[in-house]
Image 1 (spheres, helix red, strand yellow):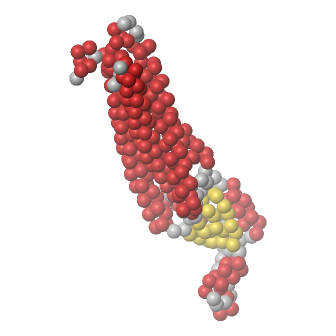
Image 2 (spheres, helix red, strand yellow; image 1 turned 45 degrees about the vertical axis):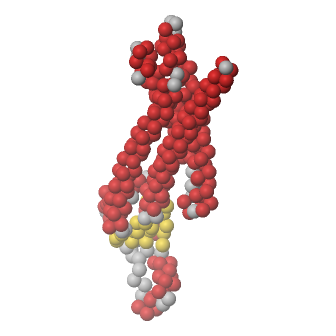
Image 3 (spheres, helix red, strand yellow; image 1 turned 120 degrees about the vertical axis):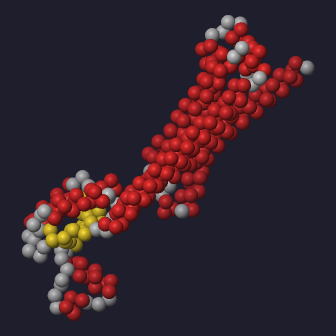
Length: 292
């Protein structure tokens, strides 16, 4: 009879652990998925920002030596990603290919100017910083005009700030939900052992001595759940990468490693805190209160 009861208790215990692991892995999978979306949104935003080009038109009387100095300074600037010099002859050729007609022959002269296209680093693509760059460039005597799509930059910055705010809000909310769900699973697991906790306390065991095994067990469950969620995320990332290769989901292994480490850390932290406070609660209860 006692053997059957022990087997029943072990099955219940394994079932309890299994449910905790599944709960942790599902919640952390969703948290990791949200984190992945946040990270990819940031990288996609940076990608589009770095496609923005600022064009510097040069005066016709600009000396080649002065142009070379300007190009060298632009390449060294902390806001520059790449610098491309386009001569007026090359620009005329490109424009002729676009419209399908030799406008230089028609006009009898090439009205275009020598130009320098600079691609900016994503952090510099804001209305304020680009306005400052434009102002500094216009001071130079060889610069005739500086152009870029100001309405696009303002719209892009506005929308990105709005998107960042909502993503941050959703991340905080989802993390809170994750903490609540995992905490509930851990509390139920500890609740099933409340009489064991009180018995150990009654025979003289200290609170720390009672608490440590529960915390270590929960941390192990948290690690297992985290690893399962990471396996699910890897499968999801590989599927999306094969389906939509343009997103380049596997492009940055460093970011993915940080994300996976954060998931494991979150799993350990939540299970540790939940178990600590759950055991503390039952340790502070009187024996007659364990039945409620």
